[in-house]
Length: 146
View 1: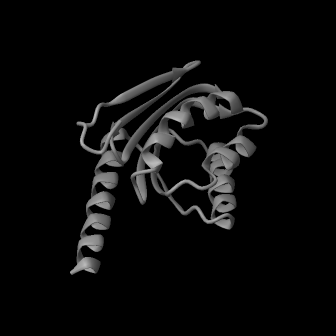
View 2: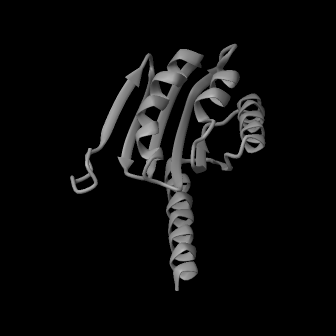
């Protein structure tokens, strides 16, 4: 896609899981059931397209009875190495999933990728928080240029 072309939403399914690139800097994932390393890698290929053009990506994740299968945390570290900063809102996060995702976030910080992660009770509040974060980051960038 060239810089001048209009943005087109992208959608991909890997097993029971899905990703949408809703806007150039906004990604939505829906994970259902067991999440394996190969599915994470397949879905992330779609998100990679946003990384070349953005300093920060805003991510909505819905977990529907999701479980990280063996090898998924390590795969997450591999695929997100070198990613831009990510602001992530998650709905449906169990305690064990939160621990696994926090391990990934902390590990990524060691290799230079910052992630802000927050859990929510519903999609509406998660997306509202992401919109607020996005606007806040845009305003800060505008203020720094002034």
